[in-house]
Image (tube, rainbow, N blue to C red; front, side):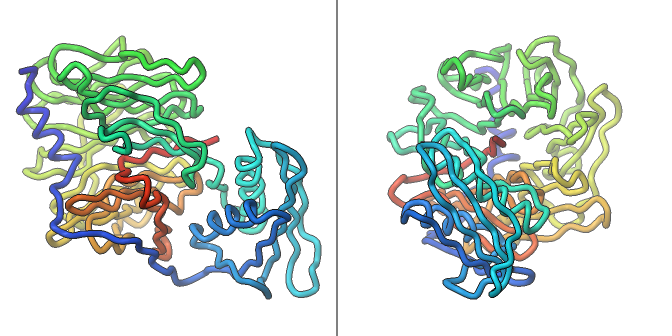
Length: 393
């Protein structure tokens, strides 16, 4: 059965059990350093999208008038938007720029990112893309969209369980795990050619594919030698090097921002915890998160390499936590009424995507890790959406 039991145990490390709760539309208001901004545009569509975007950002608080900054957007053509930023009631000019995109919607989001960077110094995340798992068709499939569920596209039609889409650094590919052949194998979606190809189908189970920051390598979990272990290969899933070798179960590998280490989950200590190992091989060492007996699903911030986000067991449920390697401290950053799982960083190193999960529902949220503000992204009408990945543009 291709080590089916071992794979199910591996999945248990990266997919917490369901909490017996239901979830509704929740928008947790942030506190702290939010800045009032007045946002206007020359079309209702642009204004609504701009308001939607800025409402997700913990640094901003859109107001009807009297903002510390006023941000005006104007549609100039089919794929061009101008942005003008002024300061205070005097309307002191701060910044103007004309931005092009793939369409008017994308141009608006790029222009909004430019305004965010000019005002705060933070990298913008609005124009990034989402890859995620949705069941809109009745089966779990891989979808992409912009961050606010525009330009939605379904990429797979496997008709079988699919898991964990993860994007390449250039945003042109996504790797994911599928049971297309009734066994878990790793596939890659190429957005340019619009092709889905088999990437790893070795003896045993194949899961957890994740690109390195430079896109030349792939980390994955393979059980061909009898136990789920962490491997690193080239971007085509070949030239494999085994990194772990023990009787524990490993899962969820991801690279450090400089590509020198692999962060992963192991139950070597008796329960799932976070470990790192050099990409060249060597001894694995446990991260001292010291916050929960259940730590899984890690993601390492490229914007702030000191920060790692992960899922932590809290009471009878799960919440999103951040481990700061500078201070050695961990903190819970989500306030979900049910489980908050599967966190991944956005481009600014402050916000994360995650899945809010209850017994029968999954929804995608953005969480500001500094204020705790949480905003739902996936529309109720879409159905279940989870396992997010952020594709920078």
